[in-house]
Each structure stands twice: as structure tokens, then as C-alpha cells.
Length: 110
Image (cartoon, rainbow, N blue to C red; front, side, top):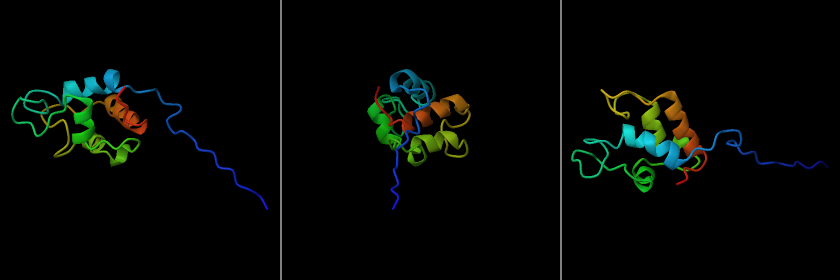
């Protein structure tokens, strides 16, 4: 009788480490947390996105599961209701990839 040995493989092992403070926060700050959108006290915003906790909470970030995270889904599907809204430009492919990898790596507050 043969035995089957299963090794767990880290799907993020060869990806660059993404930092919330260095990589993700600047994307959110410059594209989402602006007056009239998602910044506390500006009026008109649905919810603030000025801190890590707010981003994770209000954007439905599911650590390790980018496709289940509202944040990833609203930025990659730049159509009606997606973010950032028109007339703003959509996020670049590099910015979207950084958010994807950050979530995939556990959406850490680092």
C-alpha cells in the first residue's frame, strides 16, 4: 500500500511582500480618501477610508481571499458602481495587482 504525502505550497512565496503602510495606504489615500468621497468629515461620503481598520471593515477585505473581497472586486471591475467613480481614472494594473497580492498575503496591517 502506498502513502500519499501532501505538501502545502505557499502561493505567495515568489511574490513581492506588500505592505499596507508603504504600498496600499497611498493608493487608498490618493484615489479613495478624498473630499467628497471616503474621508471622514468631508460630507457626502458613505463611509471613511482613512485608516487600516476602516479599509478592512468597510471594504469587506477577506484576508487571503481577494476574489471574495469587496475592495478588490470594485476596483478591478471598472464599470457602473465601481471605484473610483467616473470622472476619475481607474486604478492602474500595478495598483490593482498590489491590492490583490496584499489581500492574498493576509491583508496585514504592516
